Image 1 (cartoon, rainbow over the protein chains, first blue to last red):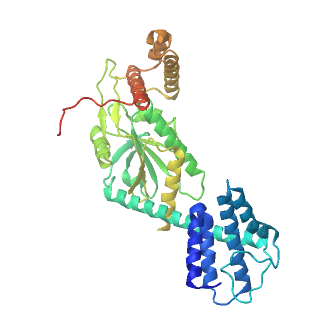
Image 2 (tube, each protein chain N blue to C red):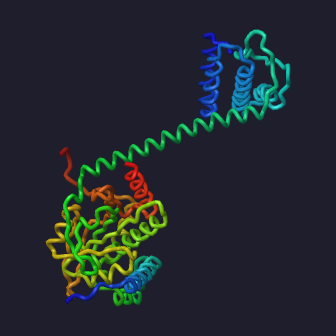
Image 3 (tube, rainbow over the protein chains, first blue to last red):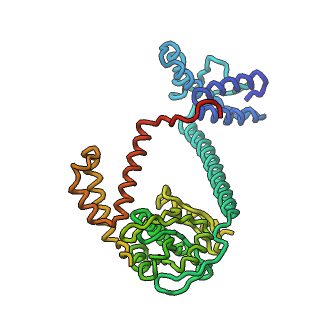
Length: 317
Length: 82
């Protein structure tokens, strides 16, 4: 290809106009013309690729412009016809800036065009996808760093599980933990969230490459949720779910550790009351570090996906 | 001593009664007298606290729906620059 300044200007103008009409094609065109322009040797193969692309672009541009104007469309179809039927030894009427001295015309091969376009398109899509993945990974890393700085769950708790055994935070180190605070007299939210949590655990269990996560339920209503009450409650959910309770002081300690808000409402005639509380599911890594949280808006697939990501990043470190 | 918490089956019974009541209210434009039968069922099958909670919840959901569809006019506050 000729690499003189007027040609460069013309190629920029053409590619800009094509970009305006058909951005993706414009990019391909730019790429290939750069390739052509960089060739110092008069390579027949590259010249013909360049020429056929130029004609493809002129064909499309002409057709697009010609929509509504029959004469223009007829004029542009000249280039399109050459592309489709590949008349050898046919000189185009406009001077092609891919021309060099002693340049033989060649047949335009539809197959080669398709292959070349697909290859370039595929490469560009691949590049975009890689950049996107990297951006996501970096965002996830930033978020984890920020949550680590919040440093929830640094303390230790000592509570009774629903079988009456005493458990402390140390007992759960070395395992991933999914923690939820609630109470057994909860009308609908706690059962919903625990159902969701159970479904997440089941989904993650199905993946043999991931460690088994431990679901925990800590009550915010120690006055009513004693060990038998918890035992009755947790049996409706995932078999691995452990319910934890204790004295009001022990529960307050655990709640403070995770900055859980809990406030018992007024008692009615039956002594019944509802406890208003934070509705969050906490993810804790095997080192006992709080990594992430999930609110009511996250569904089980989103939570499972997020946990899987955390698990995979963790083992890599 | 307070009554035990409802188990899974009891929760479901209460939720179903609540859903029937809410459906009736939706069909009758929140006319409570038209849905008295469902309301009695609902109160029988759910703990008192839950009845109160779900009633408040319905009011909230209706209010939210109203805000989303009709918009709202801000309350008249103090006039002039603050």
